[in-house]
Image (cartoon, rainbow, N blue to C red; front, side, top):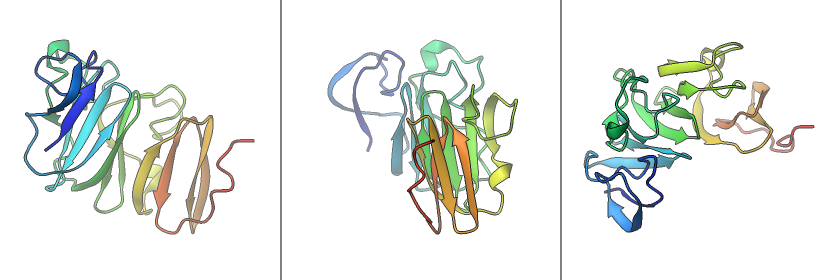
Length: 184
């Protein structure tokens, strides 16, 4: 079971009322077997044992993976993210305007909006209303992703080292170093 409490003004608590909760309250519209959850600034994600991703909360930037045409009054309702039906997801992360999922094969999937490359889909790509695979990381086995609140972040892998401005920290198999975390 998943419980939430706090500020519900954007529907991130997943409660039918869409309002605030002052004590832990069960998020009832989720499947029974949730293996992990991720809380973003204004939205939340849940990964099930079957590898499905469910999303709820603010959707102004498409971070729920439902497109932009869904009515605001439905944002607080947990629903399965479309476009990942052939992906067995093992982990997910949520930021303010971007959602991320990692497939069992180690592929990274992203959706939402980006102003400064937070999607990782390439220069000039600022929107993904449905999950898109980050092709720049093809062949890498991503095992964990964290939203970073720094001006710059690095990602490490035994065969790869690169940087993202205002990006996310990706943990891959074979960490090399954390010494370059701060952007110079």
